[in-house]
Image (cartoon, rainbow, N blue to C red):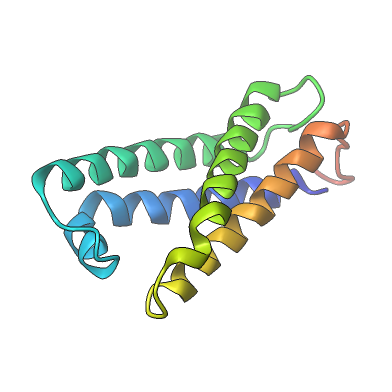
Length: 133
């Protein structure tokens, strides 16, 4: 598996999510009918900063050889994040109304795909792609 593509894709997803949660938390809570209050907005902004930081970490390590003993903490961190989030999303995906269901289903699928990819990288030894540094 080309881990560079995986790291780029996950970093873009996490950074876009982080920017959205940081700068438009009120709109997100309104769309999801979650009730806008100062605490929920603050928690979404903190979550956004976490996603943004994690996305930057993935972006900065995209050129590293990922898997095996190399960058194992990075793989385990990503795997834990996407796995636990996937379980939480799968548990509640069917409980949303028709208007929110497509968004939550899409996010659930994205998280499940990243979970499988990072799980695969975790289980396999890294292979250096021919022609790369």
